[in-house]
Image (cartoon, rainbow, N blue to C red; front, side, top):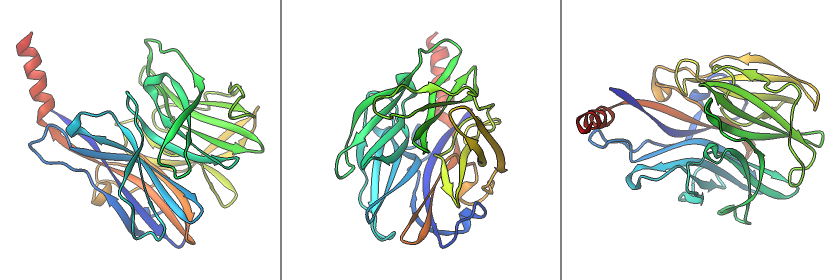
Length: 308
């Protein structure tokens, strides 16, 4: 028998920023896994939370999968102005294939999203309407034909804009090993993204796939990574970006496995971290993983063998 990998969301607030003891901060929002033992899988899982601040509102975008309707993952959003009252989530982007990792950012007074769309074999850019309740397609930033050795094409893509240059981080899994690819351009809407001369800038399943977008804190840039070298979504580590330019990239390990797993909310793992400042507080968005035994997978395998 195998276990289902199910995710929920937890959001915290703190007066100070630290990568230590995040789960001990004040919990202000928790979106649980809707699961009962007799169902073949949880009715609702929610993961990949991203925070975005605009004017006096904090937005939370996340992946939502409602198994009751056998849907693909879609992108939903809830928001707050006081960190206490949150609106009812609304779907802001839904396509004919699975979406996750909704990286939302602002550029030249426009709000954009780059969701993970591995099945499109492209990194896709979408533009938001005025109230951020709907996103429309703008363009493909990079594309790559899928070959038999590519397991995942463009995972967890996001952009860092620095000194007028847009740096695109994205991971490709070749034979179940992640390469962190880096692209760059000076024109988001019309420019061609060129592969960085040092790309891939990280290889391997321990640090080669991102677990959130680049964090800009205390004048330093940090890359959030998810540890997948034993199993998917085991923990989060932090890399410090020591230098980045169109010709150079260097990073170093800043903190390994920042969450205490094995008990409490993160008993089975975590694979997403996002941090913003809102209402003079640091807000942390994470997801948490629960591994549950799945009788359905064993049952369906037995049925397939009986049919054969």
